[in-house]
Image 1 (tube, rainbow, N blue to C red):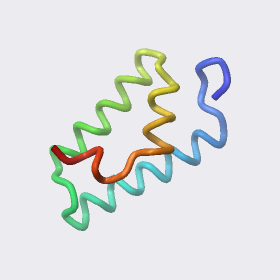
Image 2 (tube, helix red, strand yellow):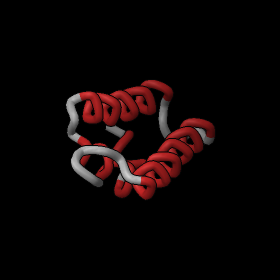
Image 3 (cartoon, rainbow, N blue to C red):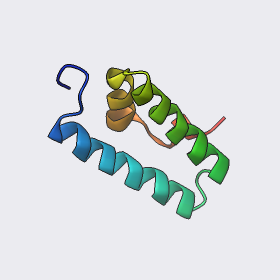
Image 4 (cartoon, rainbow, N blue to C red):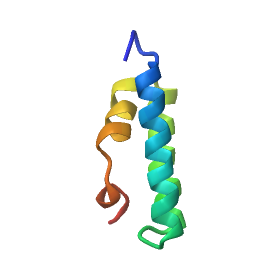
Length: 68
């Protein structure tokens, strides 16, 4: 992360994160609602310039983040 901006590494981690979420939904590991909620959480963090939180999700989120 660089001054609140996503780096190239962050963008790659984001792509991987999005792939995981889509795969989890496709295989039924998470619901559509859970996928939307998790993605909205990350989008909100970015909208609030909380890049660190978003990057943390990109790097660390696993399927348990999307389950109640």
